Image (tube, rainbow, N blue to C red):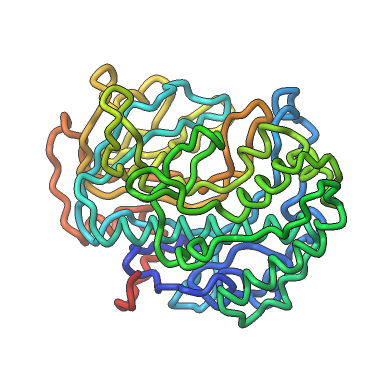
Amino acid sequence: MSTYLVYPVEIAKESSLINYINGKGPFWVENPFFAKNVNKSVDAKKWLDEYVTKGSSNKDRQKFIISSPKIYIKNTKTGEYTDKFFIRWTPGGKKEYNIWKPYSANVSAIGTIKIPISPVSKDNVDGNLMLIQHQLSMVLEVLIVSKMFDLDLSEYDGMTNDDFYMTLMGEINEKIQPLIKSKDHSTIEISEEMISDFNSPPTWSFNSFDDMRVPSDEEMNIRYYTLLQTICKYIRDRRTSAKISSHDIYNKIMSNGNGLKQFYVFPTYSATISRDQKTDVVKKAFEIAKCEFRCQTEKSKYATELKTSHTSSTYLTKENIPMIWGGDKGKMRFEGCIYVSLSFDTRMYPTGKGTFSISFSVHKMMGTLSNSVPVKFNDDDLCDEIFGANTEEIMIDPIETI
């Protein structure tokens, strides 16, 4: 099967949450409720349940790990959904990016490292990618909640976003209210702003009181909590120890103080604001994506490729990866095209590190770093050179953009 290549502006706008689930939108997130609609098969028992492998180390067992649903995109030429796709992070030709030294420059045992990348100038490509990630984050939270409380989302088909969430919260409250021993039996309520923001990615900031990142206004005031944040906060405030789910992994998370703070989905590519500790001035929103790069290891030769000419390619290793951020310089400029894939990262530590997120994985970088010899690519070259002669290049007619 060939890999589907697409520009962000070629991905149709989707304003309905359920269409990410029922197979009627540009993306389909793997789920058992509508798998037949897209000719897929999903094991409902293992789906979004605890993920444990036979060879799991003690360190892995100390994590909260949930099996991640796949993200599929609709091939507009064939009409079928595929999880074999890469998105060109460019409007169609070259694009400039800043690449920053990561907080930790250590490559993981499996050869991965997350490196911050930000566009030099934002355009509709970045807006599209941020919106897609934001919507996927909201969809994953909904699917997790459906697993936690054994809800059947097939009954939600055709609902507007408002009706979807109203029905969802009604079912959640029916499930959770009998388990709350607190005198306060008020129902769980979500923000209307959260629902309306499905089509508008929020700005995030770190809230020290709740010890989590939250959607905020320009003065860093909380605008609302996400769906999972709202549920976790409700449980945490009532200090309930009751098992709220028939699935052990969710009870483990809900009974862990740090788990309750971390249990939400954060979009990797998002706008964040912070406050200068010296001047107490709120800094301007900074849009950045923490992208996952892969280095070759003894067990795997698959790695992110840096292609600086038609005949020159470098595959990243633990030894050469610092060149991406300029080594001790800590920042590099890249001009060209970056090819990324999307997937869910559903791992977090009970010690208070990490949240669930959308992985922005870099497959290939085609162009030049700022201290490299300039190489000229025309747009056709950028399209034709991606994966070699065996890859089918699918040209898509322009459609409504996000």
